[in-house]
Image (cartoon, rainbow, N blue to C red; front, side, top):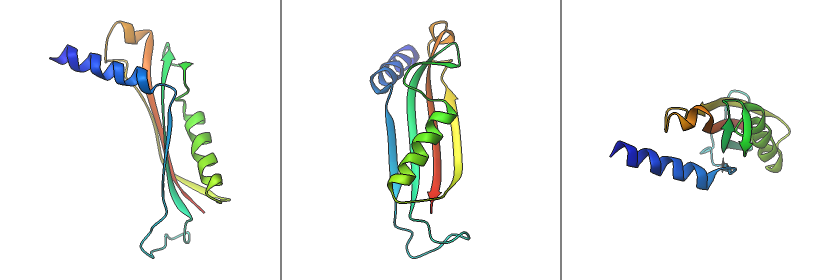
Length: 115
């Protein structure tokens, strides 16, 4: 059963590889943050396949790439400033060893308030 779940996870990563997903929230229920009223909250995720834990092979899920995509989305919402509140990169090397010791599915996420 575990092997089947791992194969399903790998298939899902392969199908979604190279994708960037951005979600935008604009309704703050009339509340303001300490820095003022943001135009939007932007959350961007990237999915990729990397070679040897560092080199993007298919897509790019490095931290600089996801931050660039997140700030571009904030700029598209009309913002001139962004306060990044969260970012992470996760490498799924453990899914299908020893194959994933060479090529790894990687996800990256960055979220911030656009002003």
